[in-house]
Image (cartoon, rainbow, N blue to C red; front, side):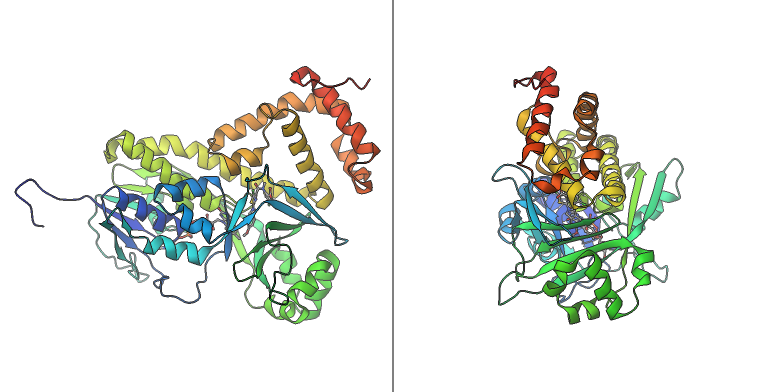
Length: 464
Ligand code: FAD
Ligand code: EGU
């Protein structure tokens, strides 16, 4: 390397392993700091690839992910290519659709295209005039076992849930690791436009909650929806013919059949086998001052909170903030990153798993509507005291572990009082929700809610 007389212009080299969502964003973060970034990716160069067999076609981008994009000047660009979802749309078995807003006007999440987001992040390489060296298409650890030697000051493992970098950590002492496959798989199905228009209302996250079966649909810019069907592998395997697919949809998702189309459904169900979902937790996230894990490589979470990418993007902000704090001294930055980030990533991994178990156990459309309305009502009554968990997770940068602690606290202070009102399980089992939420039952229910909450500091008339 040439050195100018004024002093060495030797930039530190960072090797980012994995050019997926988190690796590509991280490359931008390091390039912005003036590092020489080398990016290693085993797949073909997705900037040129036509079809990318990624993990899911579209994703829900929320506040944490947006903040990270903002740090590298990419927020506006990505947001302009996303579709706002202001509410969930709950599909009942009888075809009824009920919207439940995510929050106030202006509080929404975005449906973004994974391949497009990845491409934008890999091409946004001229940040502040600094050049990012991309060596996409480069095999880091060859499958035949031979290795390419890389000389770098820091190796950042962003190589996903089955991380090869993490495998090196496993050989070391005092490295904690756990992985859990859930019994559910997922399958993606496309809902085409009808007469050139979206087949359903576009600005919603569509949800068909059916306990152990669940379907979710997010809109795409080309006016299609990508539907993701979640069910136990066992059930996927029971369905072996096109007619059985239709029979199954007739029973659980009848309103989706004409929208996806009978022939497409019969065909697409068998195109790809159902995909597995894994939850991975580990710690520490670093080795010495040389190597660190981020994104799914550090924490794969099940998708039942829509936070995997958002958490991985937030990893990048947290690392960047610690770099600032410790003057880019890796020997101080890496241990601090582990100390700060592990509790939060473990918290979101637990939350996502908790929500999976809860939804599978008893979340049908009535229960979902009921719970979300209660959440929103309590927040409305006591906006400072009670904040729904999904709000803290989705629309703030409250540390995940603090959001969980606060949620437990809210639960503890409310549960005894709520039991005064009525048993929530009874409410759903007896079906009062079906006769309209503005009717007499709902009115007296909310009145007694306000009543029992009085001691916490809400003014309202005493019902008794
Ligand atoms: P990946 O995206 O997996 O990228 C890893 C990259 O590393 C890949 O490009 C891979 O080819 C490369 N690689 C692997 N091994 C090597 C190697 N040895 N050398 C070099 N390169 C290597 N998250 C959300 O925030 N919102 C959502 O709505 C959402 N929905 C989801 C729905 C489903 C069905 C699933 C499965 C996940 C969802 N997620 C969602 C989670 C999200 O997909 C992941 O958290 C995110 O992709 C993690 O990014 P990553 O870069 O860490 O890993
Ligand atoms: C799953 C798969 C609704 C995309 C969790 C909500 C998801 C997403 C929810 C997928 C649900 C579940 C939340 C968001 C989001 C809800 C959330 C889940 C996006 C608690 C592409 N989840 N997801 N919770 O509140 O906070 O709407 O594949 F059905 S976005 Cl499972 Cl906010």
